[in-house]
Image (cartoon, rainbow, N blue to C red):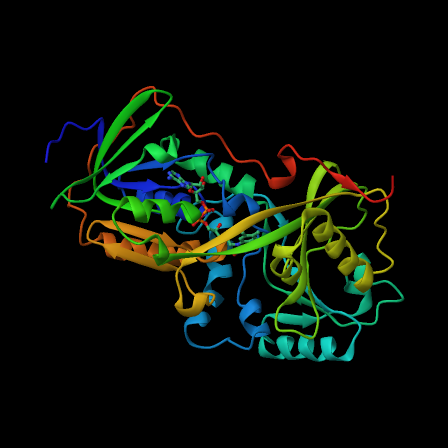
Length: 406
Ligand SMILES: Cc1cc2nc3c(=O)[nH]c(=O)nc-3n(C[C@H](O)[C@H](O)[C@H](O)COP(=O)(O)OP(=O)(O)OC[C@H]3O[C@@H](n4cnc5c(N)ncnc54)[C@H](O)[C@@H]3O)c2cc1C
């Protein structure tokens, strides 16, 4: 194989979402050279759309699956906290924490209270029942009849986190034209990625290529001669409301089913009293068939039925569709763990959850050991190549907001 590359690095990573960024920072800390290629913006895709909850297993407790493999998620919050303190495997000191912990509350119905009680018992070492005086304002209302628990799961401002991670890399993620990417993984010692942007073309040689492109992994699998069906995606229809929201809320609302009826996180808008409520959970999963305004109405009705004292007047609403991208599972089931598909020096990776980025990086690095030479490849990005911009949160993208009151 010819060595006439524009650069030679240890590892090329495709996709600057949380998985690619975490891996790049880990490899750099281990003294390795990395080229990170991004087709849209650093932190785009699922990462920007994520609710930023660093899960420690609540979801599995709710579905009564807190066993075996899914136990691995329990270690994640501590690893993130260590990184956020600046003393972990990567340095995330300064990343904005939206809430140090979040809440789990039940709707009024008895069945919902029982589910919530059960979830809290399974997780009793990390969940505390809260008396009214310690509850968030909306759940301390005199008419609220459900139970409220506090969970040790931090909530992060993910677009700001991704921006910080991108800035901490020794070189910015390179902006590439996604469809132009060509993977050549046939070499015995060296593989290469060929790409273009704005009329320019470049090639980078490496000891390994890791595809962390989220939904984009499907196209990359196909381009590498593999079946796109090795990846699966599950659609969501997320809802957001912005305006004079007085009380922030970071909470899962449980009904009688195994998943939260809705999960709500709160984000700054343009002043401390103008916020965004970002709404996922069951309402986002079951709402994929609904058209936009019906989906907004469904989410609004959910909140109004459980928290009728929440003032929803004057809020502007929108909904958008996004897919979760995962390694394909039998029958399309949800995976409980991060996953990797390895074809020699070409790897495809899916964290499954933002929270799993540290564990995914461990597993990738373990596999890369077989491919990386003792000497670090010199690696410098092709000179003058454009850097990927930073992804905004979904509510800062251009939107046609919907109102119910005017
Ligand atoms: C609505 C929603 C809410 C979520 N909430 C949470 C949560 O609260 N907590 C949690 O733990 N998990 C959550 N998740 C899951 C979590 O967001 C994802 O598991 C995680 O962000 C996936 O990261 P990733 O880097 O693998 O992929 P992505 O974030 O999708 O990033 C892939 C990157 O690759 C780029 N790309 C795509 N194709 C190409 C190409 N050909 N060339 C170069 N670059 C390319 C994309 O532009 C993007 O930047 C949520 C997911 C969704 C969709």
